[in-house]
Amino acid sequence: MIVYISGTYQISIHSYRPKEIKCYNCNASSQIIVEKKVSVYHLMYIPISPYKTKNIFTCTSCNNEFEPKDLKSENKTYYKNFKSKKWIPIWLFSGVIIILFGIGYFAVNQIKKNEEKLSKLTNGDQTQIIQYETDNGNYTTLRTIKITSDFVWLNYNEYEIEKYDFIYQIGGEGNYSTDTVKVDIKIIKELFKQGKVKKIYPIK
Image (cartoon, rainbow, N blue to C red):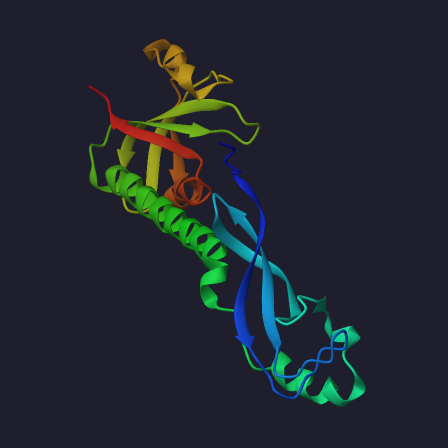
């Protein structure tokens, strides 16, 4: 059995049997079924987004199919009315809605995480280690000495490392500068906003 993870399919969202239209092939009347069909991108058969609508006319008498372009002039007015009758159902945008919801949830969750980290910094122990990503994409740490509502006094780690998983390798006591630097806490908060801060923990 073949399972298609992604692809397209077509679904009928509206159908009607008009009396006004005759089949141009067999001339039968009241035998035409008009369907508005929507082509949809899907992922695991969950509709992501419609990309095309099409109206199909099928004669139940001779099984002939034809499109609006094949309509006779006297039926053009009816077709225009039919075109405007049915909106595309909202559930055909389920995938887009789920994706947008997921992005929103992730963004809110990330903000909460940053707020929790900032709370640990401003309300926690005075001496803490801040692990963060530098502007060049490496990782290093800061050691706080004193924290107030406006400023942080800290020691910079003199080393950086390319992979965050190995940041513990540069966490030794001797790797920190002996000079204490006074930094506006707004700079630290900006690191939080940028998602640069990875972890905060007190020095044991």
